[in-house]
Length: 428
Image 1 (cartoon, rainbow, N blue to C red):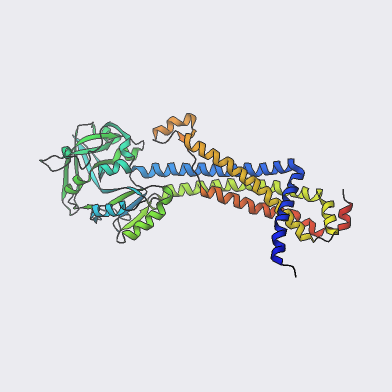
Image 2: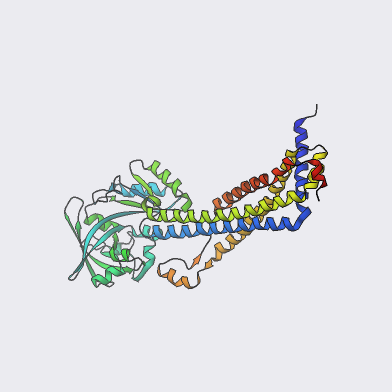
């Protein structure tokens, strides 16, 4: 008896070779259809990569102010942020977080709402105690400095006032400085409630003024050294949140799970939980993009359906001869499926190659935004768009198109099943 495995091993390469040869019988049609597939893949992969790049910029910009990619908090602080809801051993917790190889920096922060005064003017503001050297690596706020200097590092003994024991420095927003009539070097008085109910009073010197482009931040945020905050508000080695910056936005979910395992008694939240509005905006934009890409792929599939219908009609006599020689209809349908597979693979490989080259080049030099560049600079955003490599873009759309084209080719070739060999051989 013949070995069926050996028979299949011989048949498959033969079928692939015949299908490849058939594509060359009408090269113009092959190049046109393959080019349409390649162009659709190119557009889909490139614009999905462009979307991914814009999401990275949006995420980095939104989390770079105060949130961070991830936050470690005391249980219940996210639902009800109160002065007394802190976690202890902040330095130890920070060290455990920094031990994670995917973490760039971790910044402990103490937060509270206070009354800020200068002369006869008073306004409410949010006071943020920070570790200056950590903020420089994690937050974009120090980079928005417009006058003066950022807070001195905790390791700098020159910033410590020996009489008060405080580092008498404050980093404030430009709108707040204007409302209070302050400039660099002026005195700022802060009044708030301590953790145990006492009154916290601070007299600080404005070391620097920032302008973030966001009025709410520039009007309400005051940063001071966390050691000063802890002394004034009777916090020991305590903090309200620990903001974390990861090496890659794509690794945030993984890092969050690892930190949750490392710190089981604390709550670990990622930026989608902290900034749900931004997460929803990205989700809506992504869905809109996928709808557009889906319509584009469907248009390409319709063109392939038309091509294969014409192909079947043109080759009716050929199929009639094959049927009269004893070939079954389904192997002919299978041959057409292989031809569709070769055609789709040619288009997919060409489209991905073009998109990859474009993304790599534009990922380095960026796409100028023209007249919008100045507006973007006002919000401290890049004046160019940078596409980012997306595994999803390079896998999902080609796979979907491959499946749809195979289905389209199948329906187009089902006419072979109803062919009469004699009538088919008479056709011209």
